[in-house]
Image 1 (cartoon, rainbow, N blue to C red):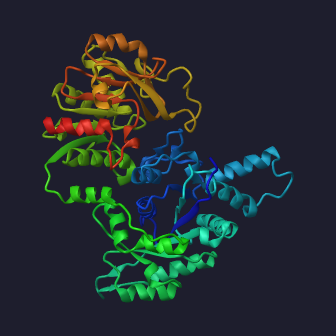
Image 2: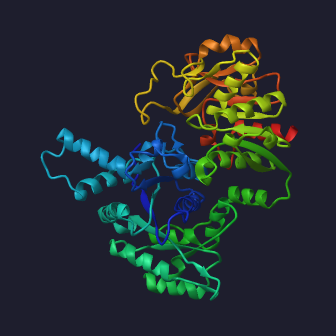
Image 3: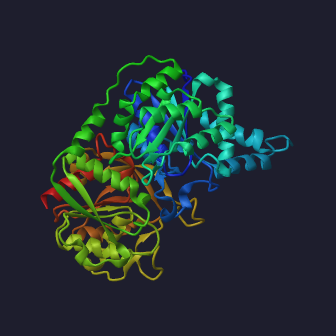
Length: 527
C-alpha cells in the first residue's frame, strides 16, 4: 500500500516547563481521531542522553518501553494510552541520539569529507525522524520538549521551521502552549508572558497558528482578543487550557471551544461532528458516587509523581472497568512497617532497580501471602515474591537475587546471554511472547493460551528452581516459548496471588483496561 502524505502538527511550549504539552498533543489527536482520522504521535527532546534508559526515575519520572524494545520518554505512554495506538523507537528522539548518529556517520565517512555542522546535518537528521513512515497516518503530532528560549530547544525549532518550508506551510500547524498567571492581589489574569513567549517563537521563524493558554479559569472574550491581537492570530484560535481534575476531561474541554474547527480551518478539512463517547464515559465514571477500594503500592520512587505514572494509570483504568474508585496508598519500602498495610484491600509491589528498599518489598510479599490479601507483583515484584516464598515456605533461607548478593542461593540471576556489560544495553526490553499454563489463574485472567507483554529488566527467575517452587505450592504459570524463562508465577492456594516478570501497565488503556489489573481490582473488591 502506498504511504499517504500526512499533515503535521507541532506542539511547542513557552513561559515555564511542565505545562502539559503531551496531554495537549494527544487531546488534539483525540479530536482528530473522533472524526475518523488516523493519528500518530512523536516526542523530540533536547537533552543529550541517547535515551532515558539510564536516567533515575527520581529525576525524570518513569522510563516507558515500546513494543519494539526502545526506552522512551514517559510522554509516549500518554500517547499510546490516549490514542490507543502502538508507537516505536522512531517516535522518541533525543538530542543525544541525533548527535550520536550524526557523529557516527561522520566517523564512517558518510559525509565524504564535508564539514559537519548543526545546519544542515543535525537539522536534516531531525527532519528525517519527523518524516519517518507512520502506519499510513493522516496526522503526525510532534511534541517538542523543553521551553522556547532554552538553548537546547533552538535546533529543534530550526528543524521544524525548515520542515514547514520543505513540505508547504498549509501542511503544517504550529500549536504553542503558554501560561497566563493569575495575580490574586490585583485579581488579574496576566497575558504578557504569553505575548512574550509567542514573540520569542516568532524570532525563531515560527508563527503560531493556535495558542493553548494554561490558566486557572476560562479566558474571557476580551482576554482572547487581546492575546490574538498581540500574538498575530485570530482570537478564535486562542484556546483556554483551563485546569481540570482529570486529564481525560481535556478533550471535552477542547471540543467545547471548537478546537477541531480551528484545525479543520487551517488544513482545509470538513468541519464535521466527532464521536467523543469514550471520554463521556470516563467523565460519567469520575462524577459517580462509587465504592472506594484502597490498594497499597510498596515502592521507593514516590518523591517524583511521574515515577509510577503508567502504574497509577493502569489502576485508574481498572477502576473504570470495575466501576469502583481506586485509592492508592503509598508505602515506602525503605521504611516498611507491616502496620502500613493494615486495612488495605490489596498489595502491589512494582518494579525497580538496586538494593534500596528490597527488604521492605520482600516483607510486603510475605504479608500478602500469609494474610491472604490479593497481591500483584510487577517485574521486581515477581522476584521478591519468589525470594520470600523460597525462604519462608521452601526453607532456603539464603535465597536471593545476585543483583543484591553474590553469596546467596541464586534464585534470581542473570541468565546466559544477558551478562552485564554496561547499564545501557543489556536489559531484556520490549514485547515478548508468553505461553500460559492451562487451568491456572493466569489463563482465567487472560483468556488466551499465548500473550505478549513488555519487559524492562536484566535478572530472571532461574528455571532450575521450578520443581522446588512447585513442590511447595507456587506455580510457574507462564513461560517463554522455549520454556527457559519464567514469566508468571502464582499461588493457587490463595484468593489472588500472581506476579509477572513483565510490565503490563505499559499496555493498559482507559477504554479497555488491562486484564491483569482489572482482575486485581476485582479481587480487591472481594477481600
